[in-house]
Image (cartoon, rainbow, N blue to C red; front, side, top):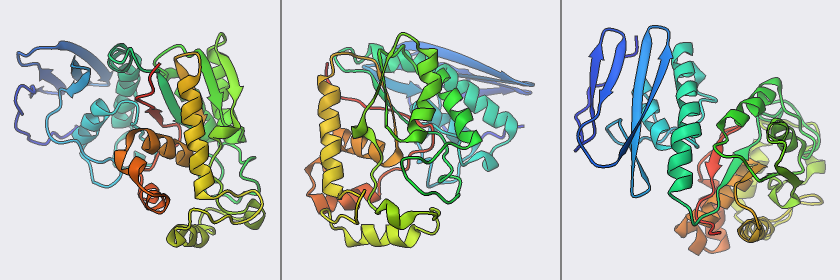
Length: 325
């Protein structure tokens, strides 16, 4: 049985109605177009919804949105967060906190939101902007804690391959262009999407590769855990012009690559673009495009802000908003 935390209705936000193993949400009178989704899992029926006003999401769950990565969550908290951020949601790494049944409910609900609600809210209400989604590669052997030799050739794990297959179901439009980093893990994550959307053009862009700030030759045969001390030392030094060696780049060079990519995407002649890339590169794109504090900071401050930026899970989808057609 999923336990519900008592919450007070906020304004016209609907309240809960519980009857045996059936959960329902009753919609109060208000303006806007209500959208309902039902998810059945065993004896449970979850009925959730959202309405759109002025291009913004208004979830049927009341209460404040919580940060997924830093706080403990009830199941209701997670559904609330999912409703607010359907394209940023990921259950990866948090499976231990929720039952298999709850995980299936979340996955089914996310698929519905991304396919239907996400399409209406993020595409139809932003007709003057390009539709660009950024997808991090699936779990790699490095993510799984295994030793690696070359950052460009790190393969996906079996779990990563499954995540790549799952990504296809979550893409909310028919892409005209699919772009991938040249790194193996990004290309392999893109493969199922390329195979599904056969009419889409596919290109590999070196610009969207991951940020490599430790010289690859010095990391051969090491794990993420073994590199932690060097990683911390790099960020603690906060030197945007430091280059660790052959095959590495400075933070300043990395950010220039990010700006070049943003301009290239802005000038690209087509809409509906999917980009398969990496955690640090996606984070930098999002911050450089949508974070005013980051945009206005000097390079040393950018390093500090970037280091504290939001983590992005494997196979997570993010919208790159604000690039005009």
